[in-house]
Length: 119
Image (tube, rainbow, N blue to C red; front, side, top):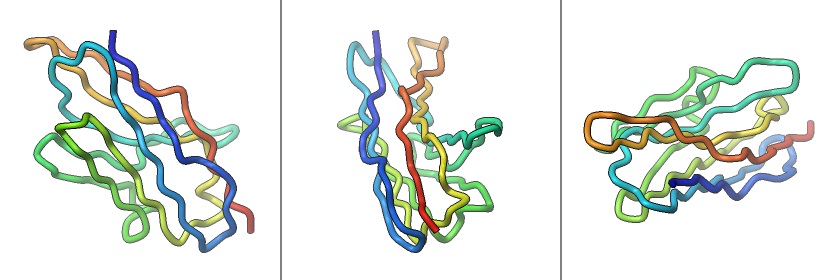
């Protein structure tokens, strides 16, 4: 069984920075894409940033230029550096990974970490 565990959420003032980290543990075969999603109160979960195993990244338009996703394939970790935070970034942030076993894969989700940006 593979688990994702997040850390690094918290309360920050607008304009500040936070760094989220996520580590996969357990019997890991192969992890392809890893990413971060967020869900604000009363809204649907949305993609924030994703990174492939080769390092290709993609970001939601709302965070481009402010957030940076990175990963360490050897450690099966993914991080999200969030700068110039805005009140609208307030949400529960979830780590996500595609875990492959041969040609079959399943989605892994972390438990979520709260990010609150005060204006």
